[in-house]
Every structure is written in C-alpha cells, then in structure tokens.
Image 1 (cartoon, helix red, strand yellow):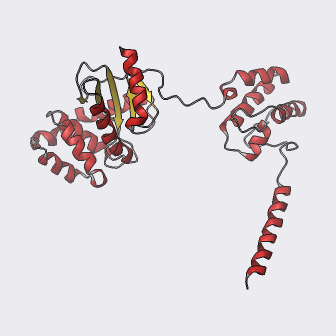
Image 2 (cartoon, rainbow, N blue to C red; image 1 turned 30 degrees about the horizontal axis):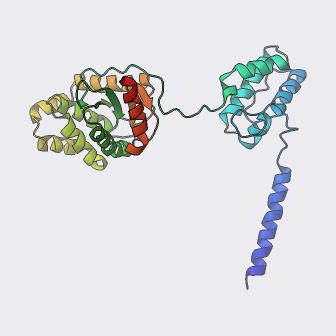
Image 3 (tube, one colour; image 1 turned 180 degrees about the vertical axis):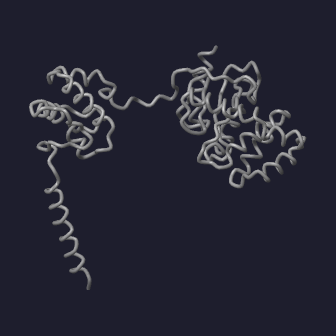
Length: 293
C-alpha cells in the first residue's frame, strides 16, 4: 500500500542528490581552496600556484590531485602541507619548476610512511624503577603505564604471558605515566611507588589494576593494608614530595622517549608499535634475541 509513496520519495532523494552533486564546486576551476593560503600573492603568482595544485598529485595515496584532495578531503594533512610548501616557494619568488622541486624536498612529499614495528632506539633512565625478571636478561622491556587505563589493564596478562614464554630472557621495568584524563591515576601511581619502597610494588600493581574501575584514596589505603604494608610509612610516602618527584620524572622520561599514550612498551629502548598478544609479538622478540646472541 505504501510502496508508491516510498518509491516517489526515493526518486526525489536521488534527484536532490544529483542536483547537490552538480552544484558542488569544481576543484579544477575553484580559486579559493580549503586551507590553502593565497595571501600576499599577485594574480600571476596565484595562477601559478593553482596550476601546481591542479596538476600535481597528492602524496597521501588517494590518487587525486592536490587541489582535488583539498576540496574532497579537507582533513588530509598531506595535501594541506604540500600546498603550503608550494605556496611558500611561489611567495618567495620561485618559478613553478622551482616551487615543485621545493615541495618535493619537503616532508609532505614523502606521504605516509610504512608502519614500523620498532622505532629507533632511545635512552630511558630506569634506575630504581620496579623490575620483574632476572637482572642479566638479554632483553629489557620498559612499560609506561596508567593504573586507570583499560588498555594497560589488558596489557598486564599479555606481558605476563610474554615473560612466561621466555623464562630468564626478558625483564620488565615499570614506569609511571598517569594520564590527566584519569582522575585517580596520579594517586594510584604514588601508591605504587610507596609500596615499592616497602618491596611490595608488584602486589600493589596487581591490586590497583584489579580495582581499576573503583580507585579512590580510601580504597587504595585499604589495598595497602591488605597487602600488609606498614600503613604509617605508606601514608607518609604516598603524599611525600619525593614520591611526586618520582612520578613527574617518569612522565618526563616518557615524554622524551616519545610516549603518546598508554600502555607504551619499549624493547631494548625501541618503541614497539604492534599488538602485545604473544602470537603477534613473538617474531619481534625472537628477532631481537637473535640479534643479541
């Protein structure tokens, strides 16, 4: 009964869609492209820049010209960056060929780089940090973590499985990286450090993650009591300037190492960008052990 009316509506939508498509500006004739700076350019230089943008391909791999990408995908950083490089060169007095060469020499011309499982090595201070595994282990894993982070909680079992799969060959060092978005992460980090001062970091580590969703100062004190900590000493260490300094130093170390989120794991100083599941990371670990031998 309602099919004719529905069919009429669909036909109307198709006509409207076609009209909107036809009304869309044509990147081949547009003279004001999204996020392209034409300021300070004479009409002659503006035309030169437009020719470059319309004829040179976007390096992001979309298959479009730079001008086309700016119109159809204004969020593309590669077309935006390349357009800026071309514009700067034209503005500086270079001709079109010189501007094109300048753009090709910019970082934007390379496009997105292939995903690397391991970044270049960096130095991460670890003296005094909690460690699990033998001191003489061939591989050192450094983990920057947040006790309220759900992904960090999941990573605990994965890293434990990795240590069990390579007994005696890997040691895991824990570094604090509480995120501002997690209201109880900083006090949880302080609690872990206070427990570490009494030789009970890992039991507190496990307890904090087990209660990640309900962390609060009263709960943390209860967890410390259950772990058998000296509560008077724990309370002092929890709020001490020294503890706050330790947390801040770990965060600074993470920032310098290129940590952008948690968990972040480094294998012998090289940031690992893959999955922590054992089947996924095993080939990387085996290769690093082979190099070490």
